[in-house]
Length: 156
Image 1: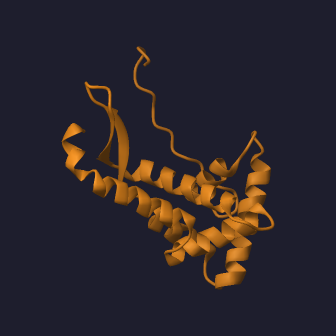
Image 2: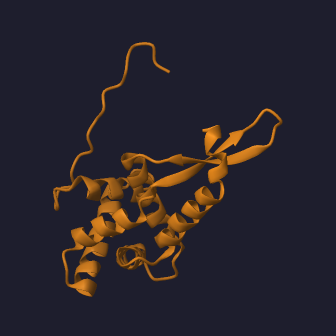
């Protein structure tokens, strides 16, 4: 922890084409080994595919997918005095929830069988916007685990 003071919060920059911060957050999560231009290519191809599939605004599909996948509650592992670990349910803030949603969407799209990442990402985003897909299953599993361990909430 720094002794000099608190670090100032920086706002995320917006991407060059859509002028949207959310798009830039997704691009930064896609990026591997500092190859941001490749991450932009993947996302913009996925957006073009979404446009062709749904014939609606792809940014609305992206927003809706992230909103549907964002968890309200999660679990955190806590160790008690006897040495056993318990999964304690905790509430998740909006920023952390959005970050988790983006991460889950990208993980689910990487696990999909298919040709290339743009195709898999577009399919996962469309499915998540409709309420199905791997990322939605991950959110539901997290909610189920938190619900099952609700009795442990006082350990928070």
